[in-house]
Image (tube, rainbow, N blue to C red; front, side, top):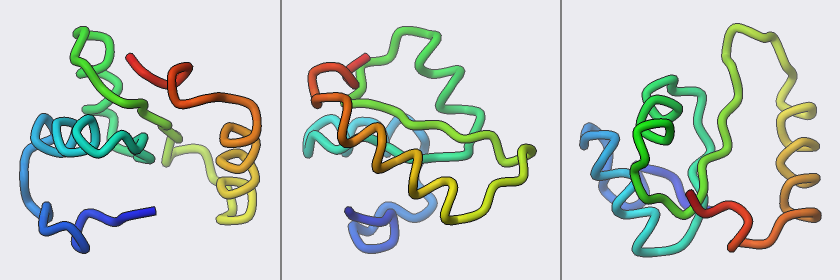
Length: 80
């Protein structure tokens, strides 16, 4: 897992974040609604895992969901 600050992408646009992720092949994990809009607009991506911040979930619930996704899906299933 890589974080935005670790790769020097703090403050860059959502499109730049997606482009970086696509070049490195990780999926994005986000609570930013803008990524849902970009996905619906047809932007290429390596995968976006979105969780709604308005729904109160514990870190444990979020991590359990991410582990489930990791166990079930392959990278090709997450693209676009």
